[in-house]
Amino acid sequence: MPDAHLHIAGRWRHAADAGTRDVVNPATGSVFTRVDEATPADATAAIASARATFDDGAWPGTPVTERAALLRRIADLLVLNKAEMARIETLDTGKTVAESEIDMDDVESVLRYYAALIETESDRVVDVGVPGVISRVVREPIGVCVMIAPWNYPLLQISWKIAPALAAGCTMVAKPSEVTPLSTIAFVELCSRAGVPPGVLNLVQGAGSTLGDALTDTDDVDFISFTGGLATGRIISEVAARHVTKVAVELGGKNPHIVFPDADWESSVDQVLTGVFLHSGQVCSSGTRLIVHASIADDFVDALVAGAEQIVMGDGLDPASKTGPLVSAAQLAKMEEFVESAKAEGAVLRTGGGRPDRDGLDPAGYYFAPTIFDHCDATMRIVRDETFGPILTVERFDTEEQALALGNDTDYGLAAGVRTSDAALGERMVRGLRHGTVWLNDFGYYTPAAEWGGFGKSGNGRELGPTGLAEYQETKHIWHNTAPAPSRWFTSTEDGVQ
Ligand code: NDP
Image (cartoon, rainbow, N blue to C red; front, side, top):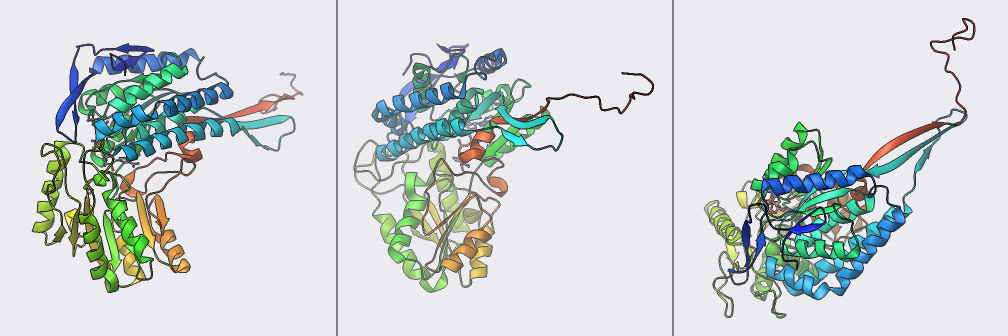
């Protein structure tokens, strides 16, 4: 890790006012390091650096093969430093080291995917039907990008932005969540070592509420890519609209997991549990709404309760832990509030509902027990609002139509799962569900080659896949007449005007 933590114009710097912020280990609730915290003036300097570097033209004009090679060098360095990067991510987020290592593998994959994709991109030739005219559509980098990321998958989420932006030839300012800045700082250092030119990848840390305006309320930015909550996404979209800045917001989810009675029992129990309790539920695509056929609901929920009570919680650095604490005291307080509201609305608490009563957990850590509420319905706040924690709600259905209607009865539309052994039923369901990713007899998987994003209030952009690269590009139509001749609209050969 560098000694200073803002990266502007190729130099590591402290904040203009020398301000710093504590970084807390969620497993112990104690401060383990401090990082520099940018002022709005630092954010403006970072934007100016990205603007000047883009306008200079050298980086956007870099041959595609060089940019692809750079992405691969970053991936190589990440692999070499994987153990340390995973440790940092675990200290910062609380997730288990095994999860952090998977995150690092996924970051490597996205870097290599966009290196390969940019090398295979070609111009699109359009036949305009005019002799002598060569018409083609080319893709060019969109320009200066601001990237704002959340705390649940700090490096993974920001890599979905940095990798395509570098591939496209953009310059950028990255801002990780104030809660989890460390892995992004370490990654930007790896990028510098790999040879990312000064001014291409700038980094500021600090509270979104402090830096937000400097990063978004400006004509110097061409694209804002934001991943986070709905309320912040709204604010950023409104500010961007004032400048007609392109914006892509990737927001929350309230994701249904629908289980039909003919579904494979063992994998269904296993994946409903993993789908909601992995990373203590702090996953945007977490399957927090179980929608289960009434004929199997009681037995199925009993099996889930038994499974949830066996989940080994603990410090993410302990290899025995299967899931870690929540990221912050604020998230813990939010869960406690959701539990009270669910009870008040009549949901039946089957397990969890508070801090776990288990030996060996640091009482100052932000642990919250896997929680299951049965007999819920779609009018309840616990079913409608994103909790972003380890809380599963259970709703029952009798018919396919009811299951589909319940699955679509959400303001969000990020992800959904369906479980059935009837292929035709499964196909009808996955086509009927209005969500950006739908799993049939699986849950939670993704690949850098397939688009990720949401319907409805889960956002308006797409990351990953070819669309995730296109977000960082402008298209330009080039009409080239190889045999120019007068059009003779205003001139004629008869009056001699040429
Ligand atoms: P927030 O919306 O609170 O914050 C997200 C980022 O925005 C943080 O970096 C935050 O900074 C910053 N921010 C806050 N206010 C502003 C502002 N006014 N202007 C600019 N930036 C601002 O979300 P969380 O960090 O709490 O993340 C959880 C949310 O992210 C959940 O809703 C989750 O579903 C969603 N998410 C969506 C994903 C998807 O793929 N669709 C993936 C992962 C998460 P700071 O933290 O420093 O305040």
